Image 1 (tube, rainbow, N blue to C red):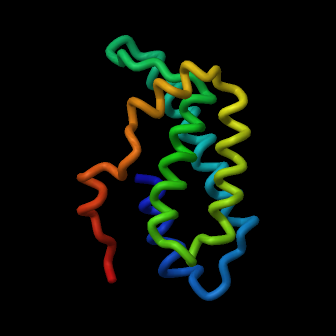
Image 2: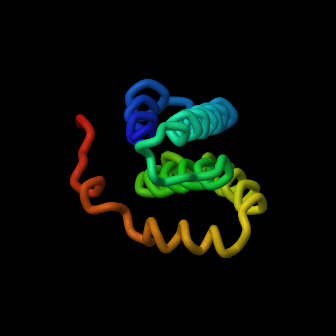
Image 3: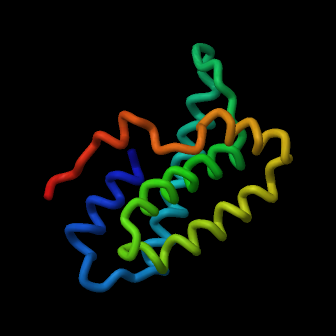
Length: 120
């Protein structure tokens, strides 16, 4: 959902001049905040899914990449930066865990998200 919110803000406020460094910083900050949130939620007894910080960061960056890739040229300069961050995150995961994450999330954009449309 953060990726959707991010796109809505960029689309309406920053469309004229996209500052790739600023937007990359925002994506990194979002993924860091998500890691903190997941860690704190993982401490609760009723949460059964345990994700490490690298797994959470990778999932967050994957979500941003999937969402922003759907908007082609608008994010052409930002997507390579996100892919680089994701690759850095992959180095902190063992290959078996990465394969599990990829299998778990699948290759397609979730159907419920495909139906979501922002204001035009």
